[in-house]
Image 1: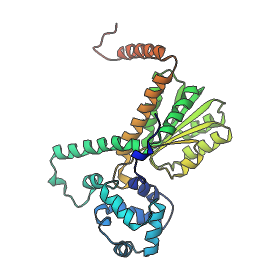
Image 2 (image 1 turned 180 degrees about the vertical axis):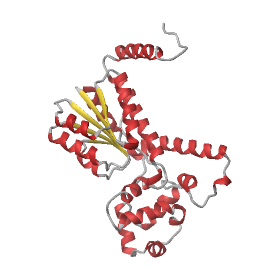
Image 3 (image 1 turned 90 degrees about the vertical axis):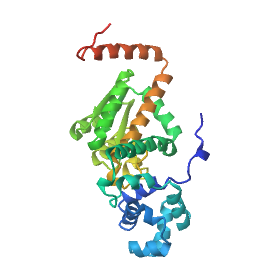
Image 4 (image 1 turned 45 degrees about the horizontal axis):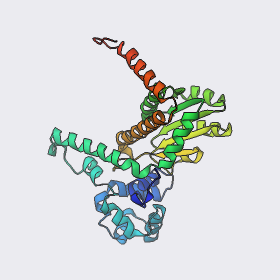
Length: 299
């Protein structure tokens, strides 16, 4: 099924703001961060008022809008007001709200709503064409090396477990020294699957650069489409970030990344010509895992 771009927003404003806020631009990065941290205020300010608040010129604000992929300041205010902006995340993270104003039930509901929103936003930032290409490359790979550090390590481990359960030759790495050896010895037919929220993990970038020199495929899952890691990847799968400042989006981003991995796994199982054999192998795997649990009987 072709990817219907008409159903997607022209600019995912939060994804764009996050990318700029994480960049090395000493003027634009602080400006993007200020907008992220003052979401409700920003959409109500005139261009002159925003320039005064952030201590930059109106010309800089206009260039900032262009950098975000907008035609002007009016579009920025509209994007924030329409909800490509950050209302729900603002409610979750706003320092103005007192903790005692929420019951635990209300807190739990807000967290669940944020994660539901994260899942719903994933299709608007993820290219279905890239998803299809990633599935095909993984299916044909002789070996799959999955890379993830820090908060991305658990996601990488889960991805490896899913691919192994489908009978694919996957390994996972979160040790930079072992990864360096694996990358240096990469053989034709190897695919590297990197997972990084920020796309700025130095060890992952180094591994991708070396893999590229050896002519190996590199697939990246990241929440920042403008990050350095995307420049050394052959294929980029963009995950959604939660609608709040980048420092607070780690848990929410995992939800989107897990959804992407789940989608890949389902697509792999459906496209593999030996799908029935895989299904039977999975059942055998479930029987073996059941033996490890107390109080369970295997048949």
